[in-house]
Image (tube, rainbow, N blue to C red; front, side, top):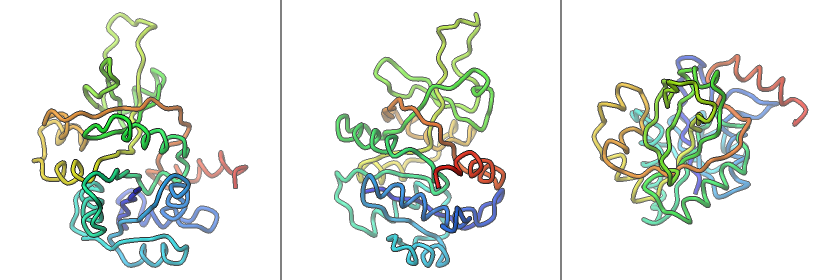
Length: 238
């Protein structure tokens, strides 16, 4: 099951999830992409999103508007849907309408084969890209499990070695139904508050986050200019 959390209010890009991409709302286009991999439900906080989904025959569930995170929103949606405890739940952000389906498939396979507390994805990035605090970096252990996530450039390459590889984290997560509900009961952590990265809550509580290394050219739509630039680049695809 893929659940897409969709919140109407966005400070930097008002009503972002309903922004039109060639006549289709962003959240709907993301859902259409995800439907190529698994069943999809959009977890909404506003009736306008429900109506947009209904128009395009995308299943949706109205959730509380009080949730602080998309993870809390999909957890409520999963409870409403009464998913089985072992059900794999993929949290796909509504602002990822261009994410390759291979990435979603790879994450799904990771969860089926390894069954970690949380699964996610990362891709190799350049040193220059690693300087960007808006692009979250992740350091992995020998088992491709996350050691730490940061907005800072990690690992620190003291001797400027060519062998150092930087991994950029992709904001797509997978849980079992049980681990999703457990994660939402964990107290907000110090590192999470410092870096503003929710996944650090799991690491501080000694939970395993398995990472699938993928190739991806996609990026999330944070501001209106991101969407305009991406549409120009990908216009040949529509």
